[in-house]
Length: 438
Image (cartoon, rainbow, N blue to C red; front, top):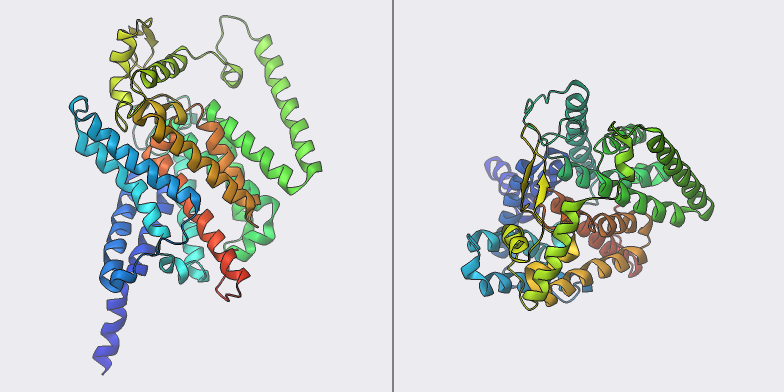
């Protein structure tokens, strides 16, 4: 009898709910820890989905209550897959492109299994573990990035970075790091303004959230990433306006004063000098404008299925040459300046969607974001849920964040949290006594 009692908990360790909890923990670690914990977390998530079918069979999925945004995401995934098949001859590794869609496809499936999180988020120690999984690796990544920035030598990668003069996290990928970090900054700002919500959500001391906010804000500023800073500014504007009109007006005044100060500082610099601060006021970006034009023209050339999911980047240099664009001036650290056709993504989520997967896919992406924003805005916790979506929408106009795996990990976690919170609110209105997230 004692043996059976001992074995039963071990069997429960590998339940679908526990496998999903392990995956969710790793995905939260990946917010600061990068691609490796994200990959491990995805393995656990897919194992959890498979085990769920073994445990529940036909009762595993319930599609009836999926929100409109989830159905838009389903359409986006299906059209993306069709775009790969339609462009099969011009895609070098089509199966690899199709494989990338599994991350997006898993999200509606998880939402169709709400029972997976029903016993997870209401448990205090599990919420504490997720908060720590988010904060501790993020603090480590910021610390490594700041050390590299101040010393000129990355502790993990040495000098093998895109730009050692910018804070770039664990792996030296400054754009990925900055566009992921913006969401943590906005979340921490919200918790700074509402300490009671932080204390209701977790037993991790609130002062840690304040310290992380200061650390994250400093790190984000010194990434010198304009799109991410614009995203934070937009998210902060929504956050403060929803919190208080007076606070929103005060924030606007501070922001205008800050921009004016930077403009004056930039004006005083000699023409031959290159100061980092004015970078936030520079609007010229020939390469980015070139990618926008190329994506727009490529959509007009192939409006139905585009060039295939994630394939515009691989075709962009050849397209610009065929369209008669001027060559780009490409500067890479440690290498002489090159005059060539820059190959890269569209630097814009909307243009990338239309260029890669056509008109239906582009409209599905826009519908997904706008429906998500509407759902987040209408939530009782909209103060926390809406600003990150606004930041994603704004910053995504300057960078291809929806197609970057590490940034996408942050986005999908935010999206899942939005829907779980809304689900909990709906159950609360019908008299459910389930635990609350916050």
